[in-house]
Length: 145
Image (cartoon, rainbow, N blue to C red; front, side):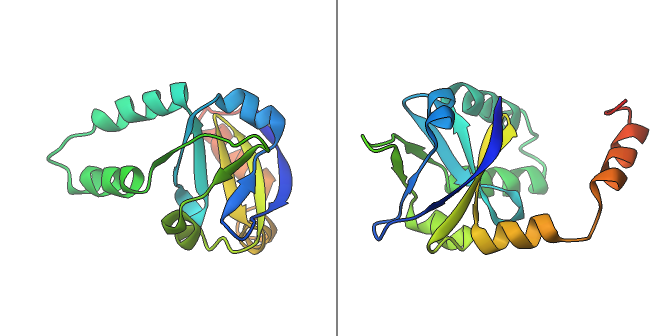
């Protein structure tokens, strides 16, 4: 399970250090792609296979399913950390997420998210919904007890 929040900077070549514990869990090769909320998602190879399978089961006749699959797979790229534990974040993904220099790497159970620092601060500081309200809403759905 991925957890924690880490701050690192991209170098001039667009490489980003991934914390050792996360690299261990991701494995020697993993996938980076466009995520939701303007961040990037990292998936281990095994988790990515599960995502591929689930998205592959979506009906081809659904315009929304086709659009989401295009969004998700078109930006996907396989990563392999270098000896210093850095990955090259493709330019198209840096542009999508607005990553320029400072990044926040967040563990979210089955995936890792990469956020531009200001994007993470805006998201986590947003007063849209408090954690208590979220928990209450999820409790009504039977997801939290």
